[in-house]
Length: 329
Image (cartoon, rainbow, N blue to C red):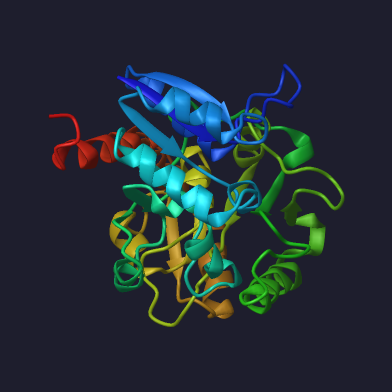
C-alpha cells in the first residue's frame, strides 16, 4: 500500500539524531508493517504538493501542529481536505487531548479534524466528537517498537527516583497545581542524598533516544503524571506511560481507570489514587524496598507493552478501521 503522510518529520535534525516526533514514529511503524510511506513535511511542502501526491495514494495520513494547519484560510483548507477525502481515504492521528483545554478551538479551526477518520488519545469525549460531526476513534498512546528495549545504566543518570517530563513549567495551566504539588512532595521525601532527580536538567533539551533508555536503566522507580481534563476522566493518559514502561523502567502513576484496565497493577506499573500524595510516596517506598518484585514486574510490563502497545499495533488498528469501512473495496 502507498501511503502519503503529512506532518513534522524533523528534517532539520543533525544527521546523527534520529527523528523522535510522533509522525516520524508512526510513519516508520507503517513501514514495519510493509507499506510504502511518502513523507510530506508540513513546514516546507505546500498543500498543493501534498494534494498532487495524495490523490493517487491508497491512504492519506495527517498529524498536524495547529500553527501550520491554520496558516491558510479556513474555507480553503476545509474545501481541500473534502476534495481529497472524495478521492483518497483520509486519516488524522494525534496524541494530544483537545476537549476541555485551552486548545479546544483547534477542533473547529484545524482542517486536520475534517479527515474522514480521526484518531486521538482522548477516549472520554465521544459525544463531543459526534456533535461536531467527526468520526473519532480512540487510539491510546504507544511506543515505537524498536525503542522498547533495555538501556545501559550510566552514572550520570543514577538515582532511586526520577521524574521525566515538564517539571519547571507545564503546557496546561489547568493542571499545573497538581503537577507542582506532586513534584514538591517527591523533593521533600527523597532529596537527601540526591535520591530523586528531575529530567531534563534545567536549561537542557529533553532526554530522548538511547539516552532515555539509559536513564531508565539507571533508576529504580520512575514517577509519572498525566493531564486530567475533568472529574471522571478515565481514558486519557500521556504517552510517557508506554514510553517509560516500554523502555524498561518501573513506573508509579496516578490510577486512571482505563489505564488500570489496560495495564494492570504489577505490569511494569503501580498506581496510587490521583492527588493522594501520601499514597504516592508509600507506593514508591514499597517498590524501592522490593528489588526482586520490581524487576519481575518491570520485565513483564516491558514485554507486554512491546507486544500490545507499540505504534506498530496502533497503526494496524488504524488500517483495520479504514478497511472495515470498505475504503479499499
